[in-house]
Length: 125
Image 1 (cartoon, rainbow, N blue to C red):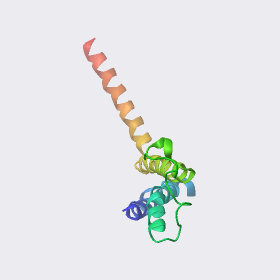
Image 2 (image 1 turned 90 degrees about the vertical axis):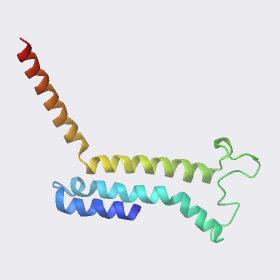
Image 3 (image 1 turned 180 degrees about the vertical axis):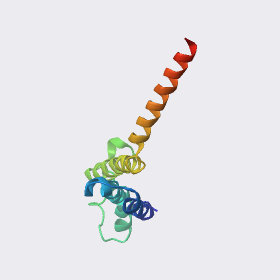
């Protein structure tokens, strides 16, 4: 799914985005990085289950903790689960909004709102 989103952004960049290389492909780059970050915890699980990255080095929680809470996360748990997942979703959100040109649309909406309010004030006078 993440590969599909990145591919869709790449397709849109080639067809609908203009400007410098970063302005054209920036959302695609951020989406690709976000995809890798979001998938990091899933990859950790796969590598751990396949004994490629064996326990205890790949454990999400510390061995001396009996509960699976944020207080018991290991360094790997904090890095992959918290940092990669949350920053990845934030990057994905930012890349999606950038690709949708949300700032330009909000500016146009604000200008239209002001125009309508000015017209209403003139009609009320």
